[in-house]
Every structure is written in structure tokens, then in C-alpha cells.
Image (cartoon, rainbow, N blue to C red; front, side, top):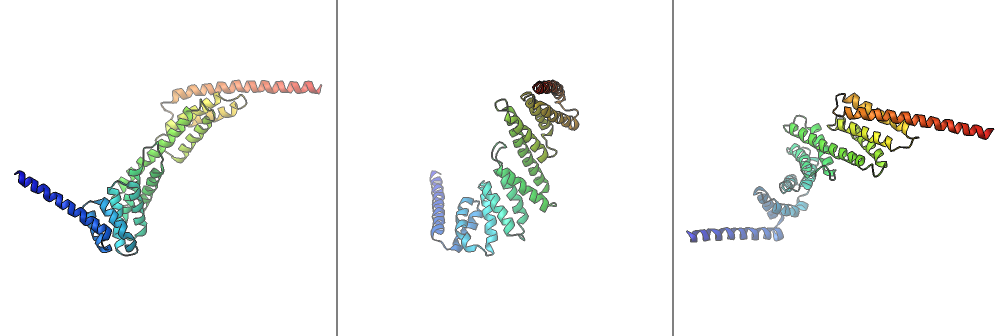
Amino acid sequence: MQKIKNLACLLIVSLVLFSCGEYQKVLNKGSVEEQYKMAVKLYESKKYSKALRLFEKVTPTYRGKPQMERIQFMVAQSNFNEKDYSISGYYFDRFAKNYPKSSKKEEAAFLSAYSYKLASPVYSKDPTETIKALEAFQGFINEYPDSDKIEEANQHYKELRYKLQKKYFEIAKTYYRTADYDVRNYKAAIQAFDNLLSDYLGSEFKEEALFYRLKAAHDFVLKSTIRRKPERVNDAVKAYEKLKRNFPESQFMEEANIMLATLNEEKRVADELIAKQIEFQKKQKEKIIK
């Protein structure tokens, strides 16, 4: 029994060595036709990394020829199966554009978008791949509204959109949280929340974004000079009214009402002080004239 096992192991090792030797021989010294045939064979055997090396070799020769359509799709699919998603997204996109009449165009368009989604990092990191995926899925949805993949594409689009919204919402909140150390960040937070609300109508973060927009405007008033307060109070009151108009039963309304009362008091005090300053300056001018 042990001898049989040893022979079996030896046979397997021999086959592997032979296979590797044959691959290296074709890779380095084989004809283009031999390299192409082996690349297809390796692709079909799911040995994508080795297949890619051979496809890279034969591509210059087959460019512009009928075989190139098949090669380009296999290159894209191989990269996808190797989990090189940014690269597969690029190649699937190229395939869809290069072969508009191909029976695989729809599949390539979907896989391009899906590749970019898989390459998309967590929301806190560079959103480049997320934006690519979002645009690719939007393009797919527009071009293939009757596709059997449309429901899945819409779900992916929704998830990507949410990821971008979360990123920009968290950026705006970071501006707000750091405004105690840099008052200019109140203005940055207000602008960031406004951008989020205008860029993503119906955002899942709308209620919370409106509330934090109000908080930023409210706190900015408290840090402002007397001269600046009336104008900034007006802006904060508008933010309050917008929150109340859109979410009259908001979980944040109790705190929002307290902020409104504070804002009204700040405006009253500021108006009184400004009026006194104006009156004082008027009397000073009268004295100078006399």
C-alpha cells in the first residue's frame, strides 16, 4: 500500500514538473499560436495568473484580428478572478467600448461596474473607485433598463451612493467637531452640509445633516462678534426653519427649539448693543460739530 502511495505521489510530482516545464518552454520559446492555445487552455483550467502572462505575450500580434475580442474578454475575466478588480474594471470597460456589437458587451459593462465596486475601499478612504463604480452602474442602468441584471445593478448603485454620502457627511461633521480649535471650520462645516444636501436630494442623511447644519450655524453665532451676529443669527434661524419644515416630528426638534430660543436672545442682545453703539457714535459726532 505504501509503495502505491509513493508511486502516486511520484507520478503527481512528475506531471507537475512536466507541466511547469512545458509552460516555461512555450512562454519563452513557443510560437505565438502555441502561446495563444496554451493561454486559452490555462484560462479554461482556471490558472488565470499563468494565462495572463501568455495573453500579454500574444496581444501585440493579435491586435486588430478576430481573436482579439476573445483575448480581451479573457484578460478582463482573468484579472477579475485574480481579484485585481481595478484592472478588470478597466479591461471590461475597454471591451464594452471596443466591441459594441459583441454578445458579451452587456456582461462586460456590468462586470466593469461591479469590478470597480469591489475595488472601492471603505468610505473614509479615496473615493476614486467608488465614483467610477457609481458612474459605471449609472451607465449600465441607462443602457440596459431591461437587463436581467438591472435589479442587482440598482442595488449596487444604491449602496455606492450611500457610501459617498456617508463620506461627505462625516467630512462635514469633522469640520464641525474641530471648529472649537479653528473658528473658520464652522463656515466649512456649514458649506459642506449645504453641498451634501444639494448634491444628494433625498439623502438618507438629510435629517441629521440639517440638524448639524443648524448646530454649526448656532455655534458660529456664539463665537461671533456683536457686529456679525444679526446676519449669522438670520442664517441659523433659516436652518432651523428648514429642519422643522422637512422633519416636523424630528428626534432633534427639542434641542433645535432650545437653540432657536438662544439665537433669538443673542439677536436681541446684539441689536440692543448695536443700537447703543450707533447712538453713542451719533452723540460723539454731535460733540465734535459743536
